[in-house]
Image (tube, rainbow over all chains, first blue to last red; front, side):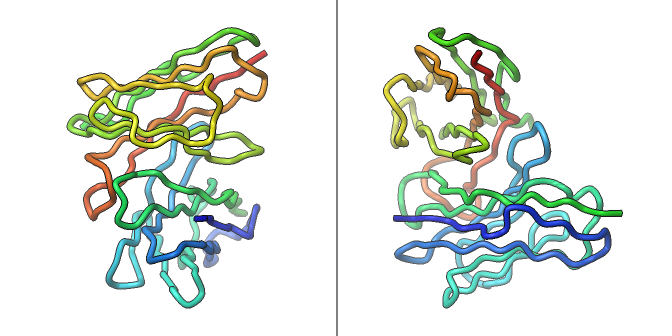
Length: 115
Length: 116
């Protein structure tokens, strides 16, 4: 069965520091992978996606993620964190080649940014 | 272009009541999905509609139902509410079914349901 693991429930970084949020997935074939961000009281905003091709994908707000098939990982990175990045981040996997938009989400990583 | 609109944003119900939540997708989007978000269970898929037909359903009891109208707007209904139904219900829309470079889920801000 498909699953997504985000091992870090809560992460605190200082403003200006680099960030890496971990995501591991379990899927039988090449999945569609996504990172979404959720600010308090809001819905989910898509940061970036991986469908195929270049394994390093760029997203909005200066985020990037790298797909590593050998490690079943899709970690999210940002070189310099801003206070406005404080939010909850969700990794998700979609069904490759299927006629469905269903996503399986990880449990999320709550990011706090210290001044 | 307007995003995904969910109404109401907040509502309070008591156990045993029923509730209907509404979702208006982005103009031109024909697929609507619903998710339940709770602190304990996280984000869980409820159901997915395309062209007025339910295409996929998550592992929820029959008290949870939904429908999609010809204009792609969708509603979900929860009958005989239980305390555990308190959650943020998120609607998402997409152009069609199946992922591609252009077809991704766009989420609304959600409807926050509190059951007392």
